[in-house]
Length: 195
Image (cartoon, rainbow, N blue to C red; front, top):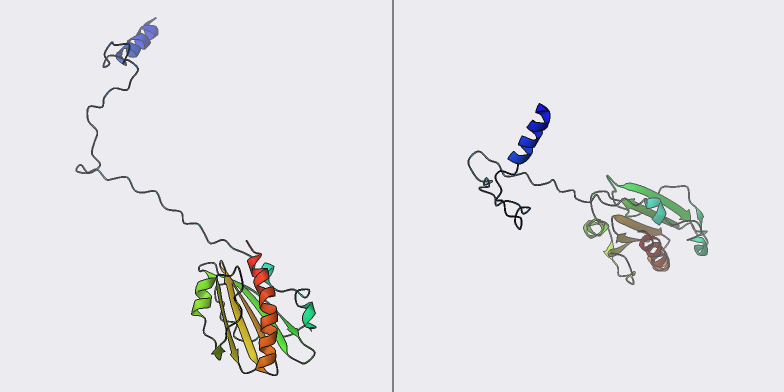
C-alpha cells in the first residue's frame, strides 16, 4: 500500500509546476533559461565529421581494348610491354595490352585508374616528347591530348578517374597517325561506356 501511495505522490509531483489550465496543460512549458554554448567552461558541440565520398573505383580492365576491338586493324597479340609515352601510373591500378601489325608496327594500349585524382588532371599534366597533334575530339571524354615523335603517335583520353592511352609505333609518322585516328573513337567508346 505504501508503494502505491509513493507512485501516486511522484505522479502528482510531476505536474506540480504546470498551471491547471486544460487548454495549455499539454503544451510544453516555457523554458526558464537555456545554457548558452558560449558560457564559461562550456564548449560548443563538435561538428559531425564530414564523410567525403571516396572516389569511385572502376576496374581499368573494363576499358582496355580487346582483340575483337582491334580485329579490323589486322593485328595479332604482341609479346612485349606497351610502349610509347604512356606516363607513369604510380599509385594507379593499371592494365595494358599490345598487338603487332604484319608490317612490324606495334599497337599499345594502357588504362590506369587513379584512386586519388581525376583523369582529366592527369592528362592535363602529361608531358610527352614530340610535337602536340590535333585529333578530332572524342565525345564523352573529359580530356584529350595527342603527340607524335618520329614514327610513334600517342593519344591520351580521360573520363572520371580513368586515363586511357593509345600508342602506335610504325615505320612513319603518317602511318602511326592514321592508325591513331582510326582507333581513337574505339578507345573513347570503351572509356565512355564505363560508369
